[in-house]
Length: 224
Length: 37
Image (cartoon, rainbow over all chains, first blue to last red; front, side, top):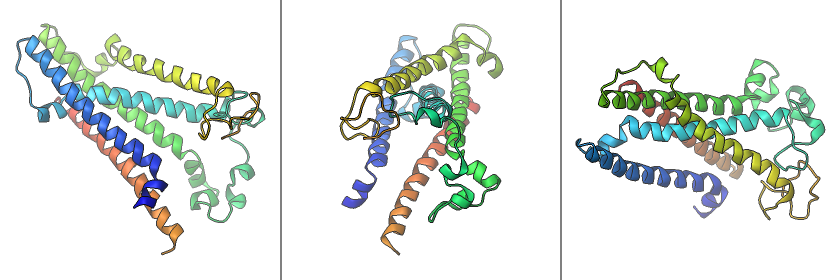
């Protein structure tokens, strides 16, 4: 068990932290939602009902989509764009999808290479982009989930204010929807950009996200 | 079963847990949204 925990520390730590934060969000969200209900002279709802509400769904999905957009863009941008001096970037002259030999595809696949890297047909093309495909799909699905839960919330507000309910398509064209999306995106883009730039001159001893402490500032593509 | 194979099975299980959990979460909230909860 100790070895299992040591070998999988990152996945376990972030998985547990995710579940704890989600539980905290649900508890705080339920309290806040009911306070709002009572303030408007409406009935409080049970915790179980809150967990199946669009209010909770929108709050969760809004943040999921922006995180997955961030990683999806980072994965694809770092193929083509480089940053001199950053350990998050590859070498300046290596921009692009690189040759089959360097990527160890087909005849250059070594012992232990995944089968889909060795076959050198359409499967290799899919496998060669599978991280981007999956992260991008999660982004699109969570953006869709945000849009349908946000749509319900929006229409609830409309009805409370004696206005007409709108269609889903109308909702995704509202400033309301785009404010929710963009307020998350801006912070993700800033965080990624600053990580790329700060890591040129700043270090974290022992982290693979950083260069070794003694690595020159001008050196690109070195990990600690 | 070799040690390497066991380690690989464990990380594969981790992959399935993450992937399955995310898929379930997405499906859950899409259903909630589409059924007007």
